[in-house]
Image 1 (cartoon, helix red, strand yellow):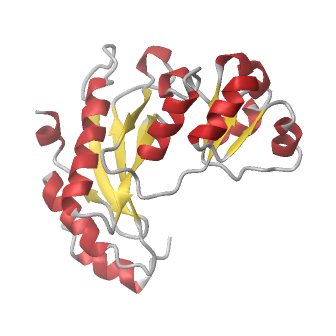
Image 2: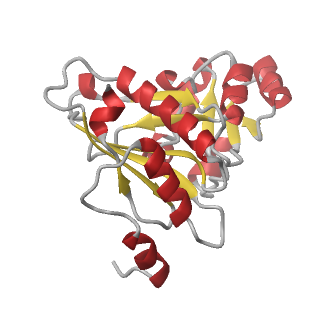
Length: 231
């Protein structure tokens, strides 16, 4: 993959042989985020889990204290009073069966998170092939299948993010924007890592966290000292 001059310059500032402390890594990532837009700061965690085994799956959600810096569009599947509640709580879109063809046939995906009341999961299940691959399927573990739609919406708007293993057993999560202060990014990062460490499946053999890398959208990755994160 061909990289531009800006990336090459930023890469020179990162010593590939060094495993950085979180504070130093955050400082470097912020300094290297020189694109014309406000880059997202992301964490990539390579785990020792084997996601093919259900008991080694990691999936959950955590509210970042300073949010993600991104405006999140929420779609809620609900009916009756729960639909009214979702609208009052600030959901961007609320609906039921009538949304199925719009999503399935018209390819409408102008939302970032889907919340559903449990009674609507039969309807939402019909969208599994569309929502599943995009990581948009509501899930009780992530708090997106719930009768308390107000709490779900408030948490998401406050900076709740989901984490889950991809097919390579890596977790990819945003922890803020390059415009955040180092303290804000450090708080968000620590909150995420605490949740990931707590979520360790008991059946994982060997190292649970194999590598943790911080990066911005357009910048080079900075590897962290995993031993210091776990202790």
